Amino acid sequence: MDAEWGDGTRAVRAGEDPAVPGAPLRPSPVFAAPFHLGDQPPRANGADAYGRTEHPTLRVFEDAVGELDGGRCLSFATGMAALTAAVLACARSGDRVVLPSDGYYTTRLLAAEELDRFGIEVQYAATPDIERVAADGGLAGARMVLLETPSNPQLDVCDIAAVAGAAHAAGALVAVDNTTATPLGQRPLALGADLTVGSDTKALTGHSDVLLGHVTVTDDELYARVKGFRDRTGSTPGAFEAWLGHRSMSTVDLRLARQAANAAAVVELLDGHPAVTGLRWPWRPGDPSFALASRQMLRPNGVVSLELADEAAVTRLLSASRLWAAATSFGGVHSTIDRRAQWGGDAVAPGFVRLSCGIEDTADLVADLSRALDALG
Ligand SMILES: *Cc1c(COP(=O)(O)O)cnc(C)c1O
Image (cartoon, rainbow, N blue to C red; front, side, top):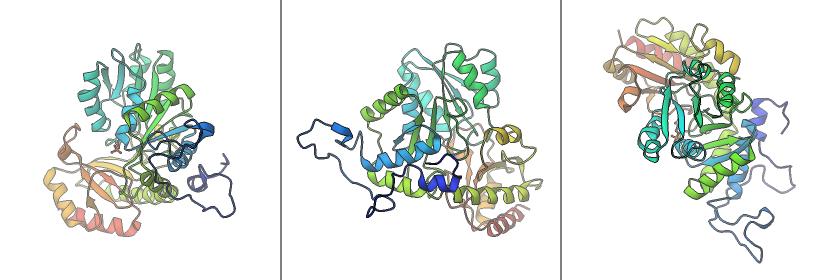
């Protein structure tokens, strides 16, 4: 792939082999558990042997995502499988890992319910504070620090390069949950991270119909460790998911562009609206994340958060809207509103919502949301 190509070209062409006459433009899924070994030892000359450890559809998809991330990618059945592998392939009993206290709630559950059980000590730091914690020597003795920037759902950001510098000086690895940004929106490996992790269930695939995740690294030894963990614990995605993921990511540039344009218009409507407080979108001038996001990230996306008065206000807004669906997850083609407090686990007010702008027409979304806001009185 040409490093000079733009996002649209890269999203389509990443991972593609040179054209072969008669071959399809995009390979079809290969459904197989075992492959013929013939008279060769398993995996001789890179031949496929067993689908849990390798299959052709996985390889093309991983090549594509890896090219966007700038490293070697390993794909997983879900984002949580990817995050689990990133942590457990690197940390052992007695190690300390630093996690965002304001990050994705299942990551915090993973820490509290599983890592703790295996004797891995967990230290929490909030995304806006982690750079200071790192500068003050708070990472000393840690095995790994996981950043989530922008954090989900509150959309705070932290300086990946600054934390990576301090973490490496302290002997810690740096992993970044890059789900909200996507590989087009932020390149953590180029900023000094050792691992970039994503839930590809969200905007990378973006159609709300598949669960996937990935870990990308540049170091070969780290690659072997994460691959070993995945292959032994068996969280490899099957051929259909990998094919769907590859097919879907071809349009990620177009989808992100429309989602970001919709978010900009929606933020303009919401900014200063009497029913709305705590409006967050890292690309709104004046947002606490604006300066750093503009410097560190490559492009905006469609995730916005804000607070309404209470739970009843969110219910009224949703019932008055035709285009904004009540649903969790984000980054899909549909516009959605998620009241986070109903899931438990996030330290947010009952009226706190995360909006995910889809790819519908901007004017339709704004008109629908504006009418729904009127219903709040
Ligand atoms: C959704 C999400 C995950 C988990 O991904 P799944 O594919 O649902 O397992 C992890 N991190 C962040 C930031 C997420 O938004």
